[in-house]
Image (tube, rainbow, N blue to C red; front, side):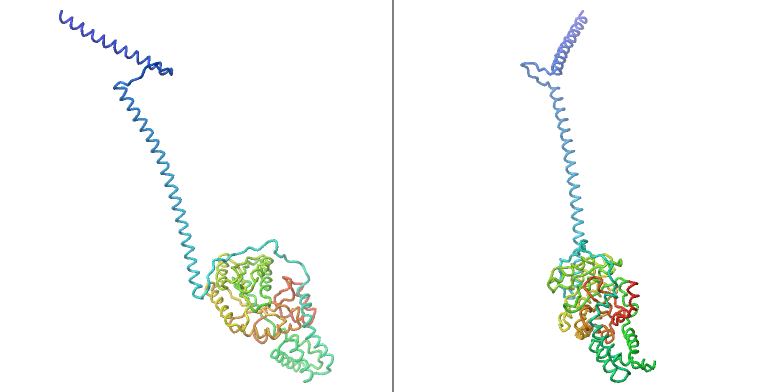
Length: 454
């Protein structure tokens, strides 16, 4: 009986525990139901039991962990972004440093190269594109031979008219005839030495061909002049090669104008031409050249007025190489042939070109004013002492009776006349051709063939 009593008591205890558990579960279910419906029990505070406290703490820790992970993720994104920005910045700074280094090295080379020549370095060099609005297009106008005939009118009156009068006045060829012919040629600025050559050659031909009439001497004289003025087939080699043309001469002879006209002609023949404004001494020289390069439609390399001409040429040479120009034409300041310091500046420019562009074909063109006559001959002799002059441009032949200087310079100095100018228009500067020039001088119709072919 005792055993059964004990068992019943135990069962009662178990039943009591179950009832308590059911009561607690019932209360929790009611609370959950109320809570899920969004209703709080009025006047009651929910206190967490030990297990609930642990659970709440675990949840809080989990939420904190999630928040921390999110924060960490955000921080990682920020860090990654910062790293990217830093890498971009470093890359940009690295590229900038490298570019600055390359630029500095290039500038250093430039400075070292021209410092040896005593050149004042400037960073103001600009390459100016031509203005399309002012570019001058080729026009169909009367042929050059006709313009040349017209331009040589004063010289023709001085030389040819005197010859015609002489031939008609004399009935025989004697010493008096030769003496007067010599005087006419000298008065036409053909020069004493050249005149003596022509007279001796004429006497020889008269003797060989048994000439008796003075008027028959005219054709032999014309033939002698053409032979003397022939410049050969290679006079314009620079048109077919990468070349640098250095244009020199005193102020007022027409250097800038001639440069613009040559650039215009070659540009319209499909050549890439660049022009360097190295005349930095004369006021408004750069502006004048800019006007001509715009008309020609070619690029201009220039600095500020008063800059070192050698520095301009240095930068122009490298610009021409970089842009694959066919021809670089360098304008220079007007230099009086008796000014030693200006001549030394010209030598310095030549050394820069020789050093920086040794593969270029070189031409040094001297521009002379045809109206100055024998003074132009003196300038040519002086310039020849300090520069390897390869050609002559004679301008303003349309306004002078001294056009014979073209014959004198080529005969006495052996320097070919490559261009002659007989007007202000761009097409009024043309290549020199001995046959055309002499035919125009004597107003012979043979030159019409040249006009039709051009």
